Length: 243
Image: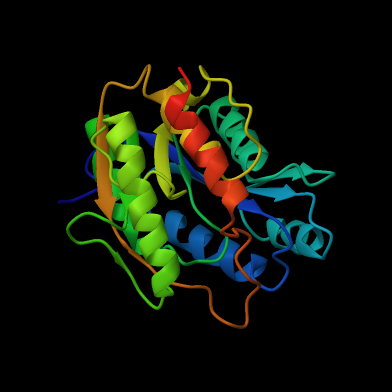
């Protein structure tokens, strides 16, 4: 499919939350920016610096002078993954983009997967989620204990939510900004992802999944900000019972 043939129909921006990413910020921004610059769409990259204590902010500012599709949002203090997502979503809506496509700063989500997202956006799909757990998806070099816990957790969530999705805890997704502007989320941590799905499901009319292969961070980059813990899973599970 020629993804550029319907380029006048949609616009989208990539939203990337960042916290202490000085070793990876420049590569992340340039990789994504180079990719979207070759597309025949109205696009931009929004990096949300979530109160980084290292040189992430300085690096982003230096890069911004060289790029024409780059927007920086800054939290003076660290507010958490959920807050960074909300800030990016609000800016995307303010700038008039049809979709916000959220990605991680560690480049474990290859930019080539943006293509199938575009296909779904051109169809007008409300909520598009990347998945590791459907045909064509998977993980590479991810520790088995992390993979199996995530797989079981997502199966449990699917039973409760009853949506045509298989990977609820994955932050790689695209959502119509007009829908994001209609919800109010309270969670500021990683369980924001579950709260978002819960609230979007009340107004979303269509869903789609994009199978992808999740990789791990390269050793030279900072460690993942997500940590498996009982507290995290408790926060995930509490949304299963909320009305």
